[in-house]
Length: 450
Image (tube, rainbow, N blue to C red; front, side, top):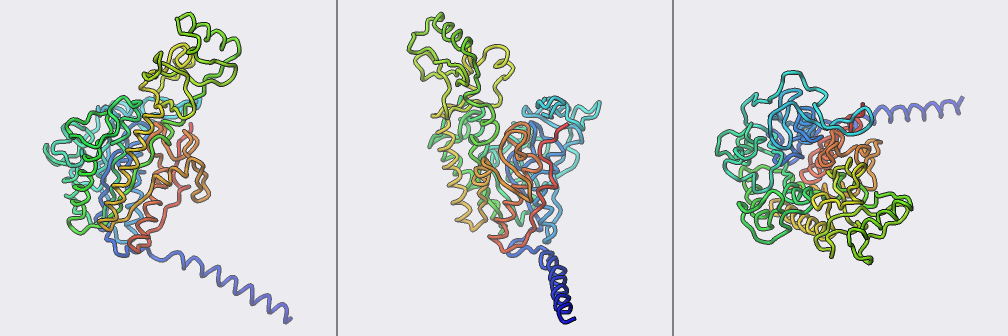
């Protein structure tokens, strides 16, 4: 009887602890030293919710700022007002209003560009449905200096559809929401255009004029630095606190890592025929690509090579935009070299990484100088290359299957956005003593399969 009583008491104690445990984890989130009553997100397509090669409502509703705002609301945050596009309608990279041409997964498992799954017959435009001010000021295509450029909406229709005035600036319209808290994630496009064009623009430079920076150029350091100073000073001018987010090394995202450099697989006969073919074109024997049976590097254009082409080697990147049907059916990458705009060579990758490192250093210095939270998303996505686990979900940066990146290989899935929201939440809590709750990553979708 005594033994039974002891066991019963132990069981009751365990039961009491188990019942009490949830109450320890369910306390109401608090804002700490932050004020979430008016949260404004400033940035580019990663902030807007652009995904699968289009701006569409699904992406906007699952954007990291909208996810984050939901958690802030539990700690006294206000409403988060987004410039939503019409259901089933959106705009693609050229900014033209139309039925969404969104990349979706086809029945055969191949990503296909076509009308999105929610597209409705007869809807060929999206319109400005409501007036601002808006809390999500993510503008697809925007660079750092674009945020402070008057009249930018006349050049970028993504901002044009929501700007308050023909001479408005993105930053000025963001301030109309009177932010008490902000996130700033800008700088990706300051280097991305150069990278996604295969390094066909100007590389990293110390000096430059914003008016002279072309679409494929890396933004000069002085232009980036001055823009970040102006943006951060304005956002904090009313006493707002916030989080500054750094930019990922774009060369580690699926757009650049999916097509293998050595994806040319040959039989012994095919290798011999290719060698003979290059000899017949007058290529000197020592310069003929050394085709062998098995895996070979693709043949790529290289203006620094003596004959203007060479076999790709480890470290070269083949872009996801390369016409893969031409590789399979027309000899691209074997009989003829892959053009320069579809590859990044070592020297070009170095330009991208130098700029990324310099930009991220500036962003971290800005956060430190203004006593803001700093969010190192770059390190998180670098770690994701070898795998992450959130809420029991395995994630990585592999195209389609990895769960983080959408079908354009650059922008985030809803699941990827939830990961970013949680990383930002952690940084905010650490800096301001808030107790925002993370979201359950498993509740958000990765790439949807038919």
